[in-house]
Image (cartoon, rainbow, N blue to C red; front, top):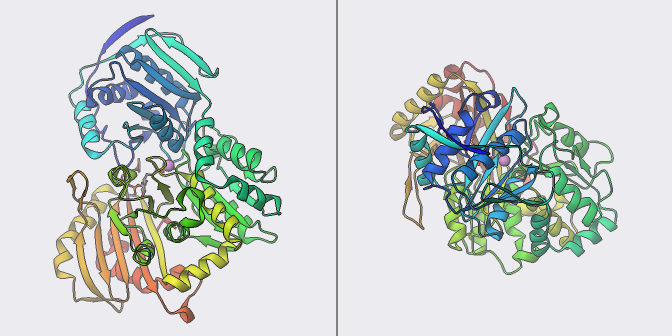
Length: 543
Ligand code: VG1
Ligand code: CO
């Protein structure tokens, strides 16, 4: 085994986005690409000498090769120990948990999350810090800075480490502990949820369909839902993780999890349906004949939290990303607790959770989580819902009807325009930014603009400021439009348009959010000129 210091040059564009660095898999597999980024990560965090790291990934193509590189580079830079999920697999929330449980200094998660995988798909690397959460902006900026000045990286030339066998081995002086990816995570879930109540629910004939989308949650869901809680065999579908996710798009929404939607809206539908994403941090909740938007799910979870074992004492506060609907705010107001509004991306929740200011957090993109880890957590959200349903003995549809009758209904939809010409998308946002001050008081599609600004976040814990976090426009009748560019895409730009309107009159509730939001959708186009500037007549994905 030899230690090599390899001369290299900075590679352009290694800038971490909303959640780590994401590129086409072939780009990551190119010469020095991964090695440069890993060395820049070590350099950006002040080295890994003597440190303990956690390592795992969502099993996508190149996960196994990349894990070996990370191990050889951690050993070359003097790390004391790496705790690795068996076969280099760990869901993102399980990695977060391991970092916390083992007091590790940080962790590497090999994943491009909800982006498709495979040789022609996407790959990614996330770095999490010692609280278990995604690296905050200050850290990602230092990593990006290090990518721009890199001259060499250090790596051992060694045989592959056998990551299939649980137990402890070594690479030079570095200890490697291979662990079962599910064990610690399941133990945590057992402390948070009333497993007996959920077991009784299943024993009483309650049926569930959990679509793991051939991604990382399969083994977790099978172990917990079927083997431990007694859900009928076959409740977990697409439960075997595959390097290309079975050619699917592991993003749990009604478009990409269409099979689950068909099951839940079809004849003899199960009582409850759910899905999770590539790395297991997102969740989608569906009842028999009813899709629950992530924003509504977050609000309903907050409203019913005291029915859940680990949250019976109530919530200290709640938080949502800015584009997430304001349904949560209604619940917080009734509960008399604070509701924080943060920029998109889980890294902004970390300080609130660490400081005990928020217990529950969520994003409209199907991410929900709590202070149990420092990531969003897909299976956790499913167990949270099951615990509520087991205790309250109501259907998903009845629970949501009751929720809307109590708090009003925030109709919500996100329209994504994908792979748009980057310059055109940037110009759309820039021009709208220039126009913001002139909008209040003007009418668009029958709605009057009340306020218009660009969101900036002042972190109440460390005082840091994050600017340029999305354009938001509020309109008459509790309507709101938010526009921002995605920070996770790998092709051109993705324009996200978030649309919301509140209905408090129970006689006017309707099932089709696109209809309920028709005026808001028209106003968004009139204000931003979306169709004209993107050259698209309709969004690529509507969730
Ligand atoms: C998207 C979502 C955001 C989420 C992020 C990472 O970011 O909108 O809410 O936190 O993905 O999720 P963007 O910048 O593309 O809008 V995951 O599950 O892909 O790590
Ligand atoms: Co994810």
